[in-house]
Length: 237
Image (tube, rainbow, N blue to C red; front, side):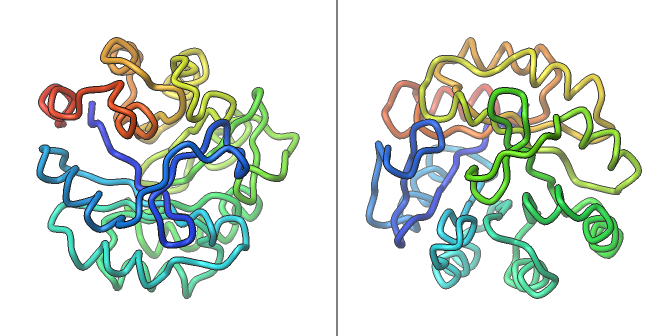
């Protein structure tokens, strides 16, 4: 399994939120490019970059995302507010290894199918889940759909993977939602990446044992609850 540090961008800073709540910001670092360099130096081989402002319609950090892509020699998967062809193509043109699509992909399967066919194996679908239901628009809008519905509807689409964030676990370091991830792994035809609540090496091992391809790490790395070097050594592929 691959451990993937998260670089969440807000107001040109690297931040961490608790429970997906924009009023509960627990970490704020001034230089996201320096943060990315730090994770690369530790030994991580992939980074997960999210433009939170673009995801929630509060603006964007597009220039900063471009700087991160140009500065890094390891693959970056990038998302946040990717809802049209132009945004998708710009990220690939700037060097993204994969683009993470959330709201538009969930709400418009035809659009997702079209562009995943244009970029086969390069688009990751993000299904953010709060209390079993998928949420959209930067975690602010609850839908009536469940992850299994999304997987079944899109099973034939040539995606790079499915990123499942347990929003109700996000930033709380209380352990991942293992049943949610295990159910997705059993059902999905693509690699599953887990996010939310990961706080220990045992949490990572539990996800690996349940078949997760990758795990996005945030709060536990930024607070030092997880030893970054140990994580990079054990979960490098």
